[in-house]
Length: 280
Length: 297
Image 1 (cartoon, rainbow over the protein chains, first blue to last red):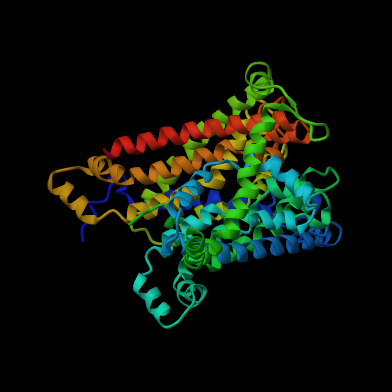
Image 2 (image 1 turned 30 degrees about the vertical axis):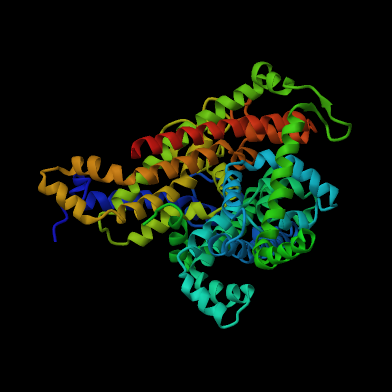
């Protein structure tokens, strides 16, 4: 019944607490609202003083511009192709490898796993430049292959899934083996279904990371037909021919898909994010 | 005899373990090809003068010496990046902890507030940067508000004294919701009995916070700082979109400078920058590992 065990008793006034929470939330949301509003304003009202809090009149011209003249739908399609393909790769390869590391015995297993964990510490910039040259050697620069193939598996993903698979009881796996399942059968029929909550976390991390990635796609693509959303948006921002309304329309189109997915899958997102940080 | 049994044992070995090696084959190949080989090559290039067009010319540690003693812009970028990390890692986790403590007070609309703090974490840094460029504009929302309050305009991104700070603000706004969510989950996992026991011992609210909450949060705090420092030292997207390193190198950061040298085809020089960054991150990781281990003992 008592709430006195809670720290921060100096928030005794609940109204002060709510006031601070509401004000800070508004500070978080206003920039998004302002972006959406700006994308719907006529150019001459965008920097008006006093600020126009409600676009009047509302125009969708900027959206028409970025979708027809700048082909933002193409960037969207590229982002989708790259993120979906790479995420599917992660689900299959990371989980499969994690299963081997968590549940199968083979010589060198723990040593290989330890070496992989060391690799987690390497910042991407260290291998980025030679990686670019390798893409060149394969003739993959400026193709989907360069965006996807180096991204179909990750040490972090294997680590995450291994932690998850360790909790699956061995008896279940043995039962399936006695029933005549091959190792791959055990993986597909027993492990994968049981690992689904972990897979959800993996999907969220991977999809978000690839969808929002900028440095690698910026370096490895030159032609506009292959730009992902962040690369296309940055390009739009740097072009001095683009106007503020178009940039904001591009911003809305880049941010919206991720925000919608987040609002629908909030619980999984939050659980996924905290899974790695807090051990029971 | 041995010649006959040897292949048999190999066959048995293959039969027993082949499937496991097959399961890890793609990730291992991918790691060797896309991480290990590039890492080694990158280190070799960092010891060479290499443009990617001619053959590498071995110069030993010259690139490193040049960077750390003569290259004023690189030294500036080291300084700027460190300042960015210090400011960001002071503001971000503090805001994250404060908001988490507030949300942990059994408030109504908790999920609404949490969503509000977390929303920018979902969006790409490029999006966040384009939004904040508009807010920071000469005639943007911030300056309009200042004018209406009777104050004068501020050159958020054009004043060399202010530009880095403006980039920090945008980045903290983007990222602290991650810390809110992590800290909130950690706070909720602290057993209530601990607070009750502390109360019976006569601990006040602040003492409970200091002697129960803080020690229980310590592993999570270490986690947040490791992730945060490693991530912040690699700051690039915001600089690329918002400032291009300017004005007068006031927002030049390590990775932005590396990118510039890569574009200039100074691949050896850029690789040396990457290894200096790596070295800094290794030192930080080691220090944090020591700190977290020392406390547990």
